[in-house]
Amino acid sequence: MNVAYPFQIDARGRIAAANVDDHVRDLVEQLLFTNPGERVNRPTFGSGLGQLVFAPNSEALAASLQLTVQGALQQWLGDIIEVQDLGVVSEESTLTVTVSFRNRLNGRDQNVQLQKAF
Image 1 (cartoon, rainbow, N blue to C red):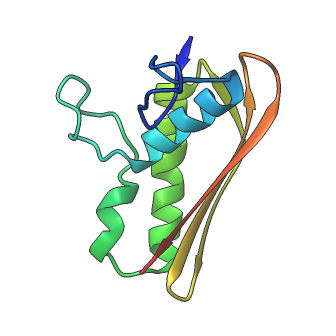
Image 2: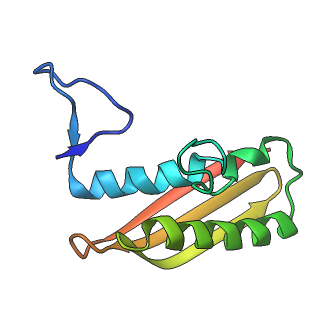
C-alpha cells in the first residue's frame, strides 16, 4: 500500500492510499520541496528549491538549480525513476522546473511541473 500525500484519512476512516503513479509523483514533489538539512535523519535529502524564496531570479540560478535537482533525483530516487528530461527555465519573475521521467515500477512515463514566482 502506498500512503497518499499529503497524509489523509479516507471515507472508511483508514489511511488514504495512492496508486503507483501518484505515489511516485508525490515522492518527486517531496524531494523537490524539501531543503537539505530539513530532515534530521537524512540531512542531505532534498533539492534546495524551497531556499529560493528570497533569491533573485536569473539564468545562473536556473542552471545551478538544474544541476542540484538532477543530482538529488539520481541520489534519492534513482532506483524508482529514470530521469529522461529535466528543464529549469527562468522567465521574468517565474522559475519553472519540469521533470520528465520513466517510473521504473511500472514502466510508465510521467511529468512533474512546478512553478515558483519571485
